[in-house]
Each structure stands twice: as C-alpha cells, then as structure tokens.
Length: 317
Image (cartoon, rainbow, N blue to C red; front, side, top):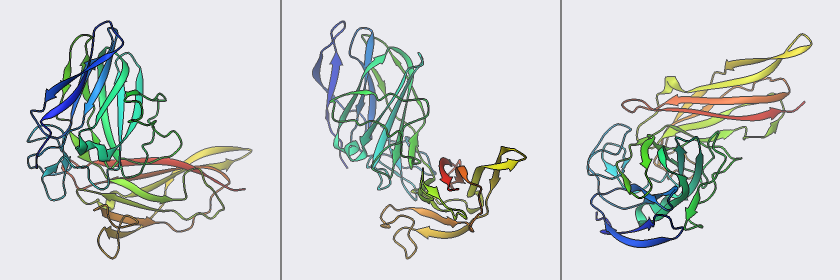
C-alpha cells in the first residue's frame, strides 16, 4: 500500500484574513491532523487525511506502529482504509476558552487525501476528537450546538441535532495548542473500535401504544460483544399518589448471536463485517408519557470498550 507524497496544506498569514496554498510532504501514514494559523487572533485546524500503510496491532485500539492514525482490524493489524461500518466521520473541537464546535465529514474522503480546514478557531489549548458512524449522518454532541466553519465550505456538514446514533470507532481526545504564527502537527490519533447499536426499536421520538416490545442489535467491527454485559434500561414516569415519580429499571432481554456474512447477519445487508447480538424483550406495559431508553454493552477488546446509548420515545395515552 502506498501513501501520498505531496499534501496540499493551507498556511494563513499573520494579521491577514486570506490563506496561501503551499506544498508539503508526508513522512508517515494514516491521516494527520495539523493545527495552522489562519488569522493573527484565530487559528485553523487542518485535517490532512492521507492514505498509508500501518503496522500490526491487536485488541480494540489503533494508532500504534507505522505512524499516522490507523483503524484497528479484526484479528489484529491496522489499516488507513475506513471500515465498512465507518461511513461518516465527526470532528469535535473543544477550546480551553470553553468554545466548541462539531462538523461531519464523509469517511470515504479519509483515504483520498481530503483536506478539511476548521476555520475561525480561538488560539490556545484545545482538544480534537474524531468519531466514525455507520450511518450517513453524524449526531451532534451535547453542549456543542455550533458547526465548525470549514474551508472548503462544502466539504464539511453540520452535525445532526435530531437523529441519534452511537459511534463504531472513536479516537481519544487529542490535545493541541494553537499558537498564532506557528504550525502544530497532531499525529497518531488513537482510534478504538467500539461496540455500537446498529438498529433499535421503538424509534427515537416515536409514539407507541402500550404494551411496548423492545428490539435492538449491538455489535462490534473488530472484536465480539460480551453477552453478559448487554443491558436494556428504561426510565419512566409512574403514579405516586396525585403526582408522578421517576423510576429506572432494567428490562430482561433475549440474545441471539449475529455475524455479518452468515445466515444471521447483524447489519441489514450483512456487509459491515460485524459480530454481536440481536436483543429483544417481552412486551412491557408502560404508563403514558415519555420513556428514556439506555442500551449498554462491552466489547471483547483489551481493555474492553463500552457503548452507552440513550434515546427517548413516548407511550400513547
């Protein structure tokens, strides 16, 4: 596997609002994140997304070996190619000033050498986290309502404030320090495979009659899922005299193993290379009103990684 030798970078000029294109060279593989100056008081974070070859690895973590940021693979090893379960990337920038923004990116651009510049970012210490989703959208993050300004404008998209999903892969938060007038290279993001909720019902925001039956699939793209960690938790309102009180309880579920490319696939088309469980409950009688749903599970990574997925729906009167 080869990597791009020449990368298009954007370097801002101190005190000016415009940017000039320069050529640089790649010394590693995977994809790199570079913090650059765009203005004297504000900086731009440049995602250099580069194809490359990685070393070998195991468990659910990535980013070790040949340099750059790599995805872990099932059975060991790493790759710069986004797995089938990584359709959309989400970049979250959090500044030490308290400012934060989120932007979504087509994960197919990762091995293609795409550039994503996050513009108008405050200088100073910050963190960057990259997550990947099997869906064609990336949900927003609580407390991060703003969309990162990007260059080019059409490359990034807003994180979705209404739909919900859990990531299939995610990096550890990477510390960066954006200093006006300098360039900071951020490499070797540690990307971990996570167990994630592939599908679920009732749907988010739906209104359902009681009794309600729950069903979901939880799976992992690199390791399996520990069956005894799969749990379904409900938060409901129950009568308490003239008032209501909040009650949280776990609902028993029946698990059926699933594996893509088998007779019992985890994903709808069986093409995401997933392994895990399909879960279902008995119909549950619920009082009318809002219901909070929480799905939990651990994968078989070393150390195990967790999915803690929440959403809500309503029970009709």
